[in-house]
Length: 148
Image 1 (tube, helix red, strand yellow):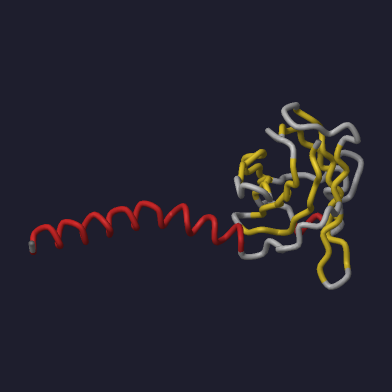
Image 2 (cartoon, helix red, strand yellow):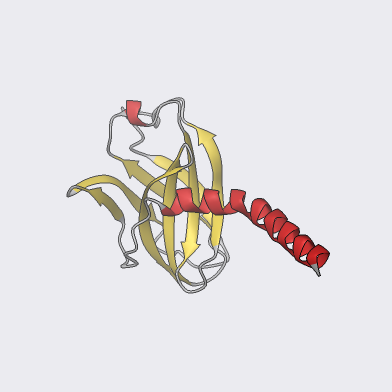
């Protein structure tokens, strides 16, 4: 009986240790994400817009579309950092990394900062999706999209 208990405790420790990396990563992503799921194209802090998203007006699930982000802060805020984008579905809670971390080395062409950061990705199914901007593994902010 003691061996069985010890074995079960050992298994529990192994499984908790394996999942702790994923849990820690998810906690980092969750730490700054707003729980507001109202459709919004701007992310604000202290009543100041930090960035906006301009999705394709024909945005539908299952197809790749272009997204333009207008980041408002000076370029120094982003320079040298890794920017990633996750989408998080409201109904089932699924989170997908749609833009792998990309090191920011220069401003948008013709702009002093990331005023026209563009990327393409596919949202797999219809619903309400939170689009999280992640800078150096920390959530910078989010917007919420309704996908047909």
